[in-house]
Image 1 (cartoon, one colour):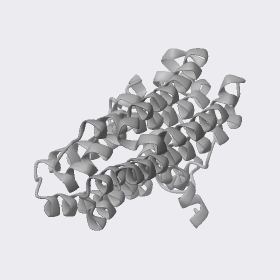
Image 2 (cartoon, rainbow, N blue to C red):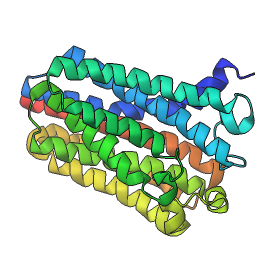
Image 3 (cartoon, rainbow, N blue to C red):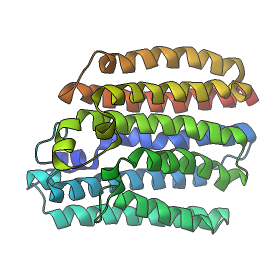
Image 4 (spheres, rainbow, N blue to C red):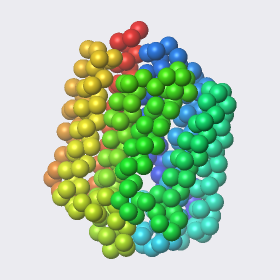
Length: 294
Protein backbone atom coordinates (compact mmCIF):
# COMPACT_ATOMS: atom_id res chain seq x y z
CA UNK A 1 0.00 0.00 0.00
CA UNK A 2 1.27 3.45 -0.89
CA UNK A 3 2.30 5.75 1.93
CA UNK A 4 1.72 9.49 2.13
CA UNK A 5 5.31 9.97 0.99
CA UNK A 6 4.64 7.79 -2.06
CA UNK A 7 1.59 9.86 -2.98
CA UNK A 8 3.60 13.07 -2.61
CA UNK A 9 6.25 11.61 -4.90
CA UNK A 10 3.50 10.71 -7.36
CA UNK A 11 2.19 14.28 -7.23
CA UNK A 12 5.76 15.48 -7.92
CA UNK A 13 5.55 18.23 -5.31
CA UNK A 14 9.03 19.41 -6.30
CA UNK A 15 7.57 20.61 -9.62
CA UNK A 16 4.88 22.74 -8.02
CA UNK A 17 6.92 25.89 -7.27
CA UNK A 18 7.72 26.09 -10.98
CA UNK A 19 4.02 25.86 -11.86
CA UNK A 20 3.45 28.99 -9.73
CA UNK A 21 6.18 30.94 -11.52
CA UNK A 22 3.99 32.32 -14.36
CA UNK A 23 1.34 33.42 -11.85
CA UNK A 24 3.99 35.19 -9.77
CA UNK A 25 5.33 36.89 -12.88
CA UNK A 26 1.84 37.96 -13.92
CA UNK A 27 1.27 39.36 -10.43
CA UNK A 28 4.29 41.62 -10.85
CA UNK A 29 2.84 43.00 -14.05
CA UNK A 30 -0.60 43.65 -12.54
CA UNK A 31 0.95 45.19 -9.43
CA UNK A 32 2.99 47.52 -11.62
CA UNK A 33 -0.10 48.46 -13.63
CA UNK A 34 -2.27 48.92 -10.54
CA UNK A 35 -4.79 46.19 -11.36
CA UNK A 36 -3.64 43.49 -8.95
CA UNK A 37 -6.29 41.36 -7.21
CA UNK A 38 -5.46 38.92 -4.41
CA UNK A 39 -8.56 36.83 -5.05
CA UNK A 40 -7.97 36.46 -8.79
CA UNK A 41 -4.28 35.75 -8.28
CA UNK A 42 -5.08 33.06 -5.71
CA UNK A 43 -7.58 31.43 -8.06
CA UNK A 44 -5.07 31.51 -10.94
CA UNK A 45 -2.46 29.94 -8.64
CA UNK A 46 -4.89 27.18 -7.67
CA UNK A 47 -5.64 26.47 -11.33
CA UNK A 48 -1.90 26.16 -12.04
CA UNK A 49 -1.22 23.96 -9.00
CA UNK A 50 -4.18 21.62 -9.50
CA UNK A 51 -3.50 21.31 -13.21
CA UNK A 52 0.16 20.46 -12.56
CA UNK A 53 -0.72 17.78 -10.01
CA UNK A 54 -3.35 16.40 -12.38
CA UNK A 55 -0.79 16.22 -15.20
CA UNK A 56 1.68 14.44 -12.93
CA UNK A 57 -0.84 11.78 -11.88
CA UNK A 58 -2.04 11.46 -15.48
CA UNK A 59 1.52 10.85 -16.69
CA UNK A 60 2.09 8.34 -13.89
CA UNK A 61 -1.01 6.40 -14.96
CA UNK A 62 -0.57 6.57 -18.74
CA UNK A 63 3.18 5.84 -18.78
CA UNK A 64 2.66 3.12 -16.19
CA UNK A 65 0.06 1.14 -18.12
CA UNK A 66 2.12 1.46 -21.32
CA UNK A 67 5.21 0.06 -19.61
CA UNK A 68 7.20 3.24 -20.29
CA UNK A 69 8.03 3.60 -16.57
CA UNK A 70 9.05 -0.04 -16.05
CA UNK A 71 12.75 0.81 -15.82
CA UNK A 72 13.17 4.53 -15.33
CA UNK A 73 15.46 6.66 -13.18
CA UNK A 74 13.78 9.13 -10.84
CA UNK A 75 11.01 9.36 -8.24
CA UNK A 76 8.76 6.39 -7.44
CA UNK A 77 6.01 5.79 -9.98
CA UNK A 78 2.77 4.77 -8.32
CA UNK A 79 1.41 2.80 -11.27
CA UNK A 80 4.59 1.18 -12.57
CA UNK A 81 5.74 0.18 -9.07
CA UNK A 82 2.42 -1.52 -8.33
CA UNK A 83 1.95 0.51 -5.15
CA UNK A 84 -1.42 1.83 -6.35
CA UNK A 85 -3.98 0.39 -8.74
CA UNK A 86 -3.85 2.14 -12.14
CA UNK A 87 -7.51 3.16 -12.00
CA UNK A 88 -6.95 4.82 -8.63
CA UNK A 89 -4.10 6.92 -10.03
CA UNK A 90 -6.28 7.80 -13.04
CA UNK A 91 -9.08 8.85 -10.69
CA UNK A 92 -6.70 11.10 -8.76
CA UNK A 93 -5.66 12.76 -12.02
CA UNK A 94 -9.26 13.60 -12.86
CA UNK A 95 -10.00 14.71 -9.31
CA UNK A 96 -7.29 17.36 -9.60
CA UNK A 97 -8.41 18.28 -13.12
CA UNK A 98 -11.82 18.81 -11.54
CA UNK A 99 -10.34 21.05 -8.83
CA UNK A 100 -8.57 23.06 -11.54
CA UNK A 101 -11.86 23.39 -13.44
CA UNK A 102 -13.70 24.66 -10.34
CA UNK A 103 -11.01 27.25 -9.57
CA UNK A 104 -10.94 28.27 -13.23
CA UNK A 105 -14.72 28.62 -13.36
CA UNK A 106 -14.64 30.89 -10.30
CA UNK A 107 -11.90 33.01 -11.89
CA UNK A 108 -13.84 33.32 -15.14
CA UNK A 109 -17.05 34.21 -13.29
CA UNK A 110 -15.33 36.98 -11.33
CA UNK A 111 -13.51 38.39 -14.36
CA UNK A 112 -16.54 38.11 -16.65
CA UNK A 113 -14.49 36.73 -19.56
CA UNK A 114 -16.62 33.66 -20.20
CA UNK A 115 -14.83 32.78 -23.43
CA UNK A 116 -11.86 31.77 -21.28
CA UNK A 117 -13.81 28.63 -20.33
CA UNK A 118 -12.83 27.26 -23.74
CA UNK A 119 -9.16 27.96 -22.96
CA UNK A 120 -9.48 26.19 -19.61
CA UNK A 121 -11.15 23.19 -21.21
CA UNK A 122 -8.39 23.04 -23.81
CA UNK A 123 -5.78 23.09 -21.02
CA UNK A 124 -7.37 20.08 -19.31
CA UNK A 125 -7.69 18.19 -22.58
CA UNK A 126 -4.05 18.93 -23.39
CA UNK A 127 -3.00 17.82 -19.90
CA UNK A 128 -4.65 14.42 -20.35
CA UNK A 129 -3.57 13.74 -23.93
CA UNK A 130 0.08 14.59 -23.24
CA UNK A 131 0.59 10.92 -22.38
CA UNK A 132 -3.02 9.68 -22.37
CA UNK A 133 -5.24 8.36 -25.13
CA UNK A 134 -4.36 6.28 -28.18
CA UNK A 135 -2.12 8.90 -29.77
CA UNK A 136 -0.49 10.99 -26.99
CA UNK A 137 1.28 14.03 -28.39
CA UNK A 138 4.05 13.71 -25.79
CA UNK A 139 5.05 10.48 -27.53
CA UNK A 140 5.32 12.37 -30.82
CA UNK A 141 7.77 15.02 -29.61
CA UNK A 142 5.23 17.84 -29.26
CA UNK A 143 5.34 18.22 -25.47
CA UNK A 144 7.39 21.42 -25.51
CA UNK A 145 4.94 23.12 -27.88
CA UNK A 146 2.02 22.61 -25.51
CA UNK A 147 4.13 23.55 -22.48
CA UNK A 148 4.94 26.89 -24.09
CA UNK A 149 1.28 27.50 -24.92
CA UNK A 150 -0.25 26.57 -21.56
CA UNK A 151 2.53 27.01 -18.97
CA UNK A 152 3.97 30.03 -20.74
CA UNK A 153 1.43 32.15 -22.58
CA UNK A 154 -1.91 31.02 -21.12
CA UNK A 155 -0.69 30.99 -17.50
CA UNK A 156 1.05 34.37 -17.70
CA UNK A 157 -1.04 36.35 -20.17
CA UNK A 158 -4.25 34.75 -18.93
CA UNK A 159 -3.58 35.71 -15.31
CA UNK A 160 -2.86 39.31 -16.30
CA UNK A 161 -5.88 39.50 -18.60
CA UNK A 162 -8.32 38.31 -15.93
CA UNK A 163 -7.19 41.21 -13.73
CA UNK A 164 -6.41 44.07 -16.09
CA UNK A 165 -8.55 43.17 -19.15
CA UNK A 166 -5.48 43.94 -21.26
CA UNK A 167 -2.69 41.75 -22.67
CA UNK A 168 0.27 44.15 -22.65
CA UNK A 169 3.06 43.44 -25.15
CA UNK A 170 5.53 42.76 -22.38
CA UNK A 171 3.14 40.22 -20.86
CA UNK A 172 3.63 38.09 -23.98
CA UNK A 173 7.40 38.55 -23.74
CA UNK A 174 7.37 37.58 -20.07
CA UNK A 175 5.14 34.58 -20.82
CA UNK A 176 7.50 33.47 -23.57
CA UNK A 177 10.49 33.72 -21.23
CA UNK A 178 8.84 31.69 -18.47
CA UNK A 179 7.56 29.26 -21.12
CA UNK A 180 11.10 28.63 -22.37
CA UNK A 181 12.19 27.68 -18.86
CA UNK A 182 9.20 25.35 -18.51
CA UNK A 183 10.20 23.77 -21.83
CA UNK A 184 13.77 23.42 -20.54
CA UNK A 185 12.40 21.55 -17.51
CA UNK A 186 10.65 19.09 -19.79
CA UNK A 187 13.70 18.81 -22.03
CA UNK A 188 16.10 17.91 -19.21
CA UNK A 189 13.55 15.47 -17.79
CA UNK A 190 13.32 13.76 -21.17
CA UNK A 191 17.09 13.98 -21.66
CA UNK A 192 17.45 11.86 -18.54
CA UNK A 193 14.97 9.33 -19.92
CA UNK A 194 16.26 9.06 -23.51
CA UNK A 195 17.45 5.41 -23.15
CA UNK A 196 14.19 4.09 -21.66
CA UNK A 197 11.92 6.31 -23.78
CA UNK A 198 13.64 5.25 -26.99
CA UNK A 199 13.34 1.58 -26.00
CA UNK A 200 9.59 1.86 -25.33
CA UNK A 201 8.67 3.95 -28.37
CA UNK A 202 8.17 7.26 -26.56
CA UNK A 203 9.61 9.63 -29.17
CA UNK A 204 9.97 12.81 -27.13
CA UNK A 205 11.72 15.79 -28.67
CA UNK A 206 14.85 14.77 -26.74
CA UNK A 207 14.71 11.27 -28.25
CA UNK A 208 14.22 12.69 -31.75
CA UNK A 209 17.11 15.13 -31.30
CA UNK A 210 19.48 12.70 -29.66
CA UNK A 211 21.51 13.24 -26.51
CA UNK A 212 23.99 15.83 -27.81
CA UNK A 213 21.49 18.11 -29.57
CA UNK A 214 19.00 17.81 -26.68
CA UNK A 215 21.66 19.16 -24.30
CA UNK A 216 22.22 22.17 -26.53
CA UNK A 217 18.45 22.64 -26.84
CA UNK A 218 18.16 22.74 -23.03
CA UNK A 219 20.86 25.40 -22.81
CA UNK A 220 19.32 27.33 -25.71
CA UNK A 221 15.91 27.41 -24.04
CA UNK A 222 17.34 28.89 -20.84
CA UNK A 223 19.37 31.38 -22.88
CA UNK A 224 16.22 32.39 -24.78
CA UNK A 225 14.53 33.07 -21.43
CA UNK A 226 17.36 35.43 -20.50
CA UNK A 227 16.98 37.22 -23.85
CA UNK A 228 13.27 37.68 -23.13
CA UNK A 229 14.13 39.08 -19.69
CA UNK A 230 16.55 41.51 -21.34
CA UNK A 231 13.70 42.80 -23.52
CA UNK A 232 11.78 43.60 -20.32
CA UNK A 233 14.37 46.12 -19.16
CA UNK A 234 12.12 48.75 -20.74
CA UNK A 235 9.56 48.16 -17.98
CA UNK A 236 11.85 46.90 -15.21
CA UNK A 237 14.59 49.51 -15.53
CA UNK A 238 17.85 49.36 -13.61
CA UNK A 239 16.44 46.88 -11.10
CA UNK A 240 15.89 44.35 -13.86
CA UNK A 241 19.45 44.89 -15.08
CA UNK A 242 20.68 43.97 -11.59
CA UNK A 243 18.38 40.95 -11.56
CA UNK A 244 19.77 39.82 -14.89
CA UNK A 245 23.26 39.71 -13.39
CA UNK A 246 22.05 37.17 -10.83
CA UNK A 247 20.07 35.22 -13.42
CA UNK A 248 23.10 34.93 -15.72
CA UNK A 249 25.13 33.61 -12.78
CA UNK A 250 22.38 31.10 -11.97
CA UNK A 251 22.17 30.13 -15.66
CA UNK A 252 25.84 29.15 -15.66
CA UNK A 253 25.39 27.01 -12.53
CA UNK A 254 22.30 25.23 -13.89
CA UNK A 255 23.76 24.34 -17.29
CA UNK A 256 27.19 23.21 -16.03
CA UNK A 257 26.26 19.57 -15.27
CA UNK A 258 24.52 19.29 -18.65
CA UNK A 259 27.59 20.66 -20.42
CA UNK A 260 29.75 18.14 -18.59
CA UNK A 261 27.65 15.22 -19.79
CA UNK A 262 25.68 14.35 -16.64
CA UNK A 263 23.15 11.60 -17.32
CA UNK A 264 20.63 9.39 -15.53
CA UNK A 265 20.27 10.12 -11.81
CA UNK A 266 22.91 12.85 -12.07
CA UNK A 267 20.36 14.96 -13.97
CA UNK A 268 17.81 14.93 -11.14
CA UNK A 269 19.53 17.88 -9.34
CA UNK A 270 19.46 19.74 -12.68
CA UNK A 271 15.68 19.29 -12.76
CA UNK A 272 15.47 20.75 -9.26
CA UNK A 273 17.79 23.64 -10.08
CA UNK A 274 15.94 24.45 -13.31
CA UNK A 275 12.70 24.67 -11.34
CA UNK A 276 14.37 26.98 -8.83
CA UNK A 277 15.76 29.04 -11.71
CA UNK A 278 12.22 29.47 -13.07
CA UNK A 279 10.99 30.54 -9.66
CA UNK A 280 13.88 33.01 -9.21
CA UNK A 281 13.26 34.33 -12.73
CA UNK A 282 9.62 35.08 -11.92
CA UNK A 283 10.31 36.61 -8.50
CA UNK A 284 13.19 38.85 -9.64
CA UNK A 285 11.34 40.18 -12.66
CA UNK A 286 8.24 40.73 -10.53
CA UNK A 287 10.17 42.72 -7.91
CA UNK A 288 11.98 44.69 -10.63
CA UNK A 289 8.76 45.72 -12.39
CA UNK A 290 7.01 46.66 -9.14
CA UNK A 291 9.93 48.80 -7.91
CA UNK A 292 10.50 50.44 -11.31
CA UNK A 293 6.85 51.44 -11.67
CA UNK A 294 6.15 52.41 -8.06
